[in-house]
Length: 146
Length: 175
Image (cartoon, rainbow over all chains, first blue to last red; front, side, top):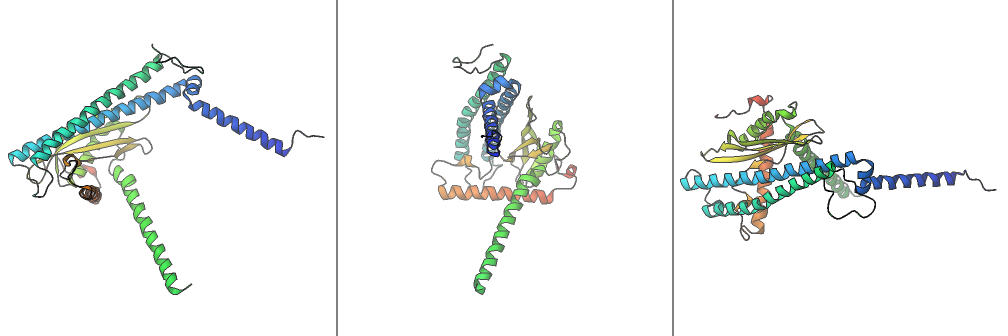
């Protein structure tokens, strides 16, 4: 006689349930699952990420602009004799002029980064407004256009 | 076990304890105590007050006199609770030259208060921006970087030790 309800079978069943739960949780992490099952939370996360990135990129540009100003003011005061660096200092007229150019080179990239961050945020908002869901089949190329 | 071995083992344990304590103190100071100092109880939209307290304290400990904000920004997200405040403080050094100090605060959702974040004097004499590809060399770079880190730590410790019980007692503009 074979009994169906044994301790081993119970453990097997529980393991299967746990495996199913893990699969489901994993599915919810994919864009397909997240947009289908809980789109509100998916888009909250996407927009929140975009907002934080945009703020960060704006800050990175700001610190470079503030550095540019600090270097220029320092250069002006060095030329005017107000700022006197120590004799062995790495701050000289040449290094200050070079610092302005270096800062500008970094800033050009930072400005691009900021534009890209805003584009990313706008894309997230646009996708949400369009009610975009990632289908289970092959998604069409490009993004859902509102 | 021999006596010498026992003494050596105890010495090693004591050394380990000192290292762990030192690392713990450093982490407590840098990640918990210093960022929050004097900023508790200031609401999110009180960022200006928090920025003033932070800027006055950190510029004073570097021997700079805070004059005014060159600019100050507050940004927060619409979804979620993150908020940020940053700006450049215009200061006067002891020799009368102008210095700009970058101050950056983040709102901590966990602690419900403003916390100091990456802040430093801009274009300071040991700034990387003056480096070239070949000067200073690797050793010089390492020495300057180490000096900068330790100098900042010393400055933060000085600030914490001199921090008044009431932050309103910090230096005023024009002092």
